Length: 394
Ligand code: OVV
Image (cartoon, rainbow, N blue to C red):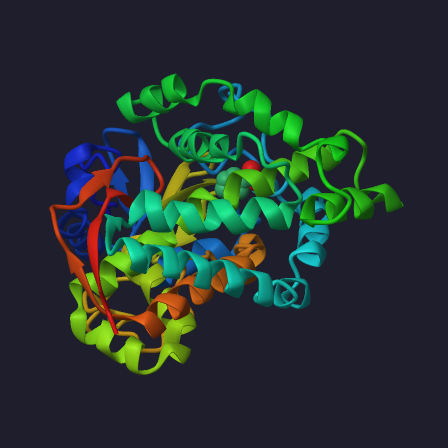
């Protein structure tokens, strides 16, 4: 049986506008599809995406998790020591982040994160009308995350264009990547500087990473690079996740009613939004051998695109997948990945989502979308640029 071909460009504006028909076609075409425009293989069904994530030795991250193959082309930035590596290097760097971002460490932030969420919810309620992307989805992570890292107050706004640049750079060199490069200004140098031990406060995730590094787990050169990973992956993703949750809850008013009635559902509502919108839509792997997948064989040295968002809406796995339902059990979705590279900041992301949604749920009776939302275009991250909202207080 031949692997089916598709001429879909999954890094194109019309795809980003409405990816669901194309994702459905990919899932239906077969367990593996060849995307002729980019010369890559793709998996859009849940089972195959999960199988790729679980087999790091066949589906390697060390040649980059974007479309670029580091064996053929020099990467634009120093490869991530966590994301763009395989064991054993991966396990050494990851173990540092797993300690620093452990569930216990994150639990200690519940109080300050709740306080910040309640303060922001009060401000937004006073304003009544605002743009839920800059004023809520961006504002909340930009308040709590840099504090938790131990960053100085100046120039934190560079974190957003930096994340936007890196997540665009996983895709092809298209106009979205070019625009992100043009917008990034001093962000790259600034993030590099902020990753140094001396730039970080004595307390916080940054200091924790450097402290563990100094026990000999990481070299002096590696430690700031591991901090850089957290600064890269830690903001844009949660911005997109919180935006996804607010947008979904505004579009499905019965789900807002349920959350308002029971704010304790905030955590699972956030997770359902991650399944439903899947902020990190795609990542690549590279085959290290001829790889069996779904009964097909992908040749060695191929780039394989995992459609995480399509997997999270695969009807083979999820009943009624296009329904946003905070009472379903979304556990097991691949919005945070799976296997050895599964999101190491997951507990932090979930705490942010839980705190801000609970603070709003307690105070707001109804979310009203007052104007057409505007999409934000990014080669990896799915999200909005603008979501005009009116809050109706409880
Ligand atoms: C998960 C993720 C996204 C982007 C960058 C990185 C990680 C990194 O490790 O630099």
